[in-house]
Image (cartoon, rainbow, N blue to C red; front, side, top):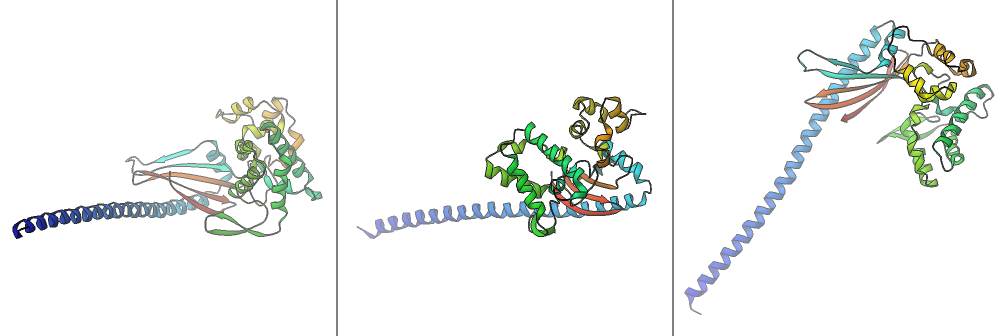
Length: 309
């Protein structure tokens, strides 16, 4: 083969090799660009989330200051319980929705652990009756095992449980719905009972370390209907009414043939329970974010940021 032909072949090989290198490099560049762009977007998101968290803390501090400045909380909180409160400036640069609920609006789940407490038999018997109603209404497969799991948790003096990711808290009994959910999952796994996930537990129970009363005036229609054996639709109509002169819970129950005195020792009745939980949905950089906190007897606690919604 002559040298000229050899050079041509070598040249074509070099061109092909160069093309392969170019395509390989291009592929690497594209891949790197994609990865870096992903990191950039992630960093942007993290930056926005961090700024939104800072804004949430500002709103939280301001809101607590306002709550502290209002002396007549007995009027303030029932007003906030009635419906979510939208807040917005005239130029629409500021927008949020404040929603507050009575913390003790349900029966305390820990009452189920009071079987041996002679001074709390009314709480225990009511909680057990309510649990039995739920078990029958939602056809739980093994309610005896579920209540056993719950009571095991309540009988422990103190131990450590994960309430939030990467954060451990000391507790006695059941102190949060998140903790309660882990027990439900354990029961569901053991009993293969999907029905337990259908129960609207928050409509019937509250999840606090301690509470001796039910703030029944702000309870769910389902719980009020159970308490006084009244038709749930009638309760819903009463609960959703904003009419002036609306009857009190006691008046409503008596007007509808219910026995208000039956569980009266468990009810807050006219007593004001200065314990509320608030959720705030607000706008930041055209995105929606949420945080929650509790306000208990003049003290704010348990701030939680839920991020972008």
